[in-house]
Image (cartoon, rainbow, N blue to C red; front, side, top):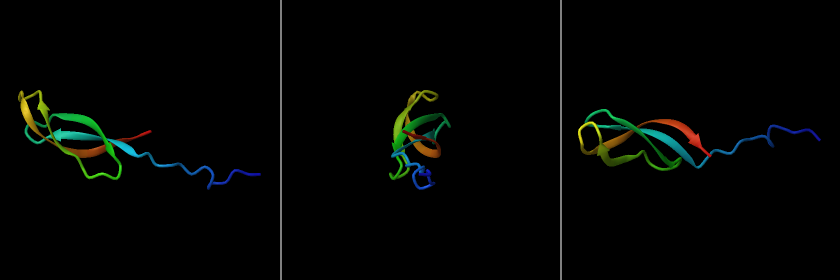
Amino acid sequence: MFITNILLKRVKSKQIMVQLESMVSGHKCNQIRDRLGDKLEVIRFDPLIQKESVYKEVKKIRSMK
């Protein structure tokens, strides 16, 4: 029996790592979210301005297993 491409098909992961960027200072950090979820927009502490600020998702970094 030969192994076909159907048997070697990879399953996509359920979570991905994304890069978040501060809208105030440009500080960047990473966070994990669900693949099918909406883009992240969170309030986190920004160490450059020493206050909380809004972080928005900039890009996908990699898949998580």
